[in-house]
Structures are given as structure tokens and as C-alpha cells.
Length: 111
Length: 114
Image (cartoon, rainbow over all chains, first blue to last red; front, side, top):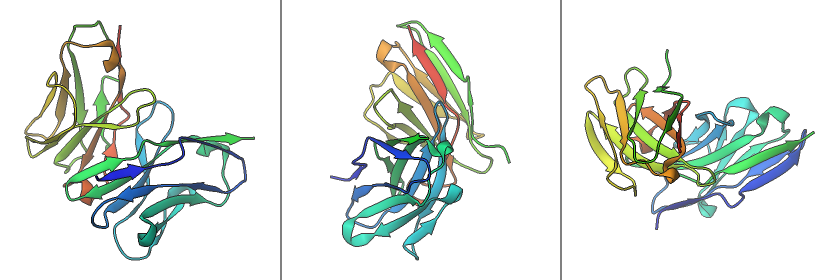
């Protein structure tokens, strides 16, 4: 069955530490891949997207993600987390006219 | 350029009533999507409208319905409200099938059913 999995429901990191949020998908073909961020009570904002080409994608706010076809993964990374990065992060995959979202990972940043 | 706008921001209704939520897409976008985000349940796909027609529907009962107008704005109607319908309802728009391009989200309507 087609699915998007974010294995980590909640992650806590210290400010200045590195961050990696995991995303795995299960589709027959390579989908389009997205990461969105949602601040409390707000809508979703696109961080970055992968359609084709270079598998390392740069996004806004210093985030990047790497597409690994062999692992069906699209993990989000940031080398140094800021307190303002505390939010919920959603991975999404698109196939044709359909888009599926993962359950989200809540990021807490410790001072 | 104006983003996706949703109204109202907050809505409080009594169980059994009807709620109407509105969404205006980004200019030039023909597709509108509705999602329900209940506490702890992530984003649940509700409905997809494109060019005035319903293209896809999530696993929700028929009392969740909607429509898309000629100007591509959209309404989501929830009839016979139940307490568990309390959630943030997000609208998104895109220029074509959502899977092939990014979706832009509104700020959401917080529906509270009491």
C-alpha cells in the first residue's frame, strides 16, 4: 500500500545542535517529495521540494534534504538548530494528482 | 501576490448545527484541497476540487461536502456537527494536480464544536 512514514513523533534537540528528521515512503514509482513546516496554530509552509535532478535539495531557513532512492527516504537536515525552528514538520509525497502527508514530527528546541 | 485566504479564522458551533468554511486560492490556481487536522491525528485529506468539480474525496462521511465556484474559491460544509469534528481545517491550492507541484496552504479555520 502507498504510504508516507515519519518514524519520529517527537524530537528534542538543543539549540545549536544538528537535526535530522526522517521520512520514508512506499510507492511504486519515485514520487515528488516535499517538506512542510507548521508553526502552532498556523498553516503549512513549504520548506523544500524534490522533483528530479540533484538528490540534495536546499530549502529555506537553512534546511536541506537528501533523496535516497535505494532507501525510499527523504530526510530533512539542518546543521545548527535555532529556537525558532520549534514546530511541526510534515513530509509529503506526490504521485500524479495525489498528495499524501506523513503524520508529522514535532520538534522541541532546548535552550 | 495574495496567498491562500481562509475565513473565518475561528468558528464555534453547537453539536448538530452546520458549519461553512471558505477558501480563496492563489490567483491562477485552479485546484483547491481541504484537510482536517484534529489534535494528534496529523493531516487528513478531505476533498479535492479542480475546475469546479470534485476530483477526489478522503475517507469522511457524506456530511462533509463542498463545492468550488467559477472563480475557483471553495466552500467546505459540515452538516450535523459532532464533537469530534473540532479541528483545524486547512485549505491549500495549487496550479494543477497537487502531486505534481507544490501546494500553498492557508492559515486554517479553527472549528470548535460544543
